[in-house]
Image 1: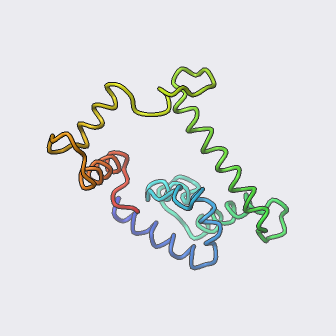
Image 2: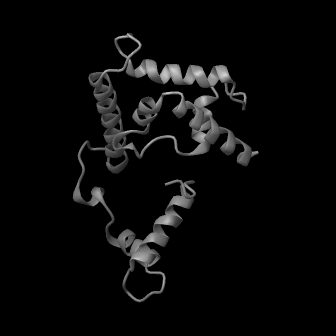
Image 3: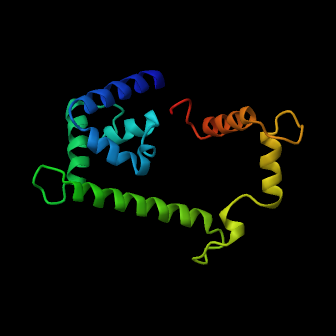
Length: 160
């Protein structure tokens, strides 16, 4: 079932892009074009508007129209550079706020050096996980392997 959904979503995404919504799709992916619903399950949920486990042509078209409408703030059926920039700025701001909140462990409204990155035992454990052969060094290959393991844990299987 999951494989069928993945194939369906991939096919629909291709059709939607071919149908002229490339700009909207890029806007949905966020800053740098690398954030957004690459996960087939999330893409499926985004398109399955009524949540019945199936995507109809009408749902696919309505989802596209809704995304377009979010960007076309003046309703003229065209997206200007200013509208796209405003949409992207809002998405970047939302993304930054979520990241800030996730790192602000003590919820004081500020990020300390400790809250900004790996430290202490956590840093040691991270290094040890990356150093697969326990030689006290991390090679590029070991780093790539650790990155791939992290992607798999988060459900990103080879979707670059």
